Length: 414
Image 1 (cartoon, helix red, strand yellow):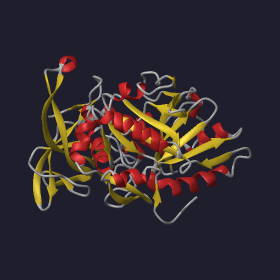
Image 2 (tube, one colour):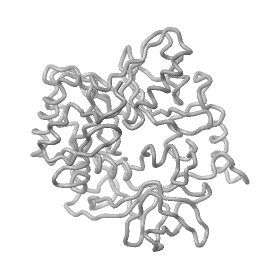
Image 3 (cartoon, one colour):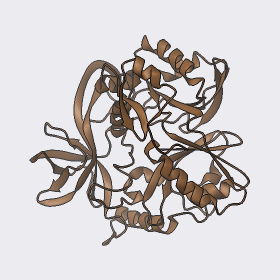
Image 4 (cartoon, one colour):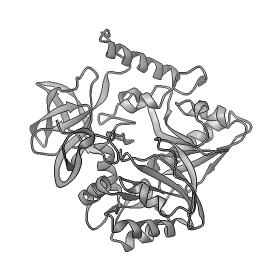
């Protein structure tokens, strides 16, 4: 497993040939954006669709009779309830209830595949290898460089991918469902997962030697419908708008150097199981204390919440400006916490309300973020963020957008 030097995905030459601005990320050379820029890529994904090279993500296969015992030990979700052709969001926790990484576990029939963050690949691999010593019949395989991975996200993606199917069918219209398809004679594992918040989202696992042809075919066909290739920059703005965490921001260590409790982020509720079938696992006791504090906080009966003093909240900036990671958040003269992620994102305007609303050609921009604040902070609270020496007004919101009315993700404006 390479530990030094910059790796390149099988699509690296394509990115360079098509105007990709290459940067170093997690040990890989990756496009941060293309010639039309981050805002255009963001808007294209929300209106039509975007192509994402995510081959830099770590992909580990787990094999052997002790596979389930291992998964139950090192992951926080209950792997035993995962039916064939399903996936689940999960965490790698430490004994103190912090997050080593967040991950996805995929279960095509007869195998298990764990996908982890690129920047944590070696750390996660070493962690898994250490834990694997407890098990006699277990093999871990790093497939990152032999198996490519691309994401196709956006309202028109179902139609685009369906037009090239030679065998198989798209996964059931349920988030986290999987299937196997054939395109250009290549067998592909495809899942309804992604990192954009789009109602229609797919990730595809493709042999590294075959991915270029499939990417080129999809890209060429999608351009006329408004699709575009998307770099790391818009991938970040899309995930932030969807209120999804990024390791090193909402997970891991906070801007003040303190470990962020796993339950500080709302999505952890879907990533941790205390079911009897789950058994013991790394961090169970600490996570259980966080969960109990969270329940006490929700009930309004708690006077002390020692294991969960802060939580991640979504913020919408009311004044002109841009919040960034590390900016301090105040309520009056009380310091509530710090911004963990912040930027300006564009959005499409819709006419009408609810299911009858339709996308228009009008667009606007807004400054949004996520912040680690006092756990007692309430949705709707107005506060201030110190940005470059100025106090800017902001509001705590429930989220920045909604995926509840397919095929579009809709911005929520307070």
